[in-house]
Length: 108
Image (tube, rainbow, N blue to C red; front, side, top):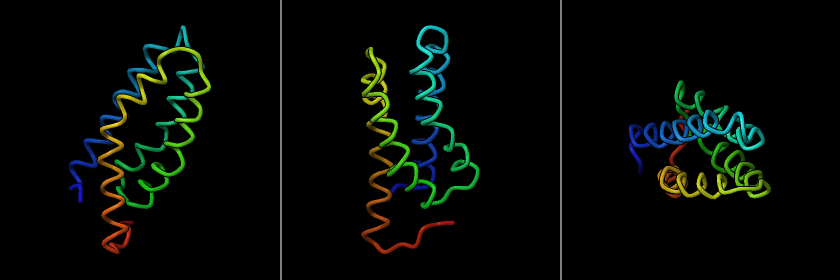
């Protein structure tokens, strides 16, 4: 199972990439910047109070909504972002899968 520090690093990597993408696209591609902001807005809560419930909600709902939203946008940013997020999402997925398979109660 991913250690808490690995999960924190994965979430931090997602936030860092997303915030840079928002900054770089806010003026000339505001639709993409909005999709990124919507994708990221609950992750600071996880960093402040880590819980598998929050992580599961992000992974199962917000991540999927993000993927759907960027797929509807013109341009390459959605593809670039989804490519970047593969590794941090993999860390999160592995943690959640192992927690579910081991019957570990979510941390609250």
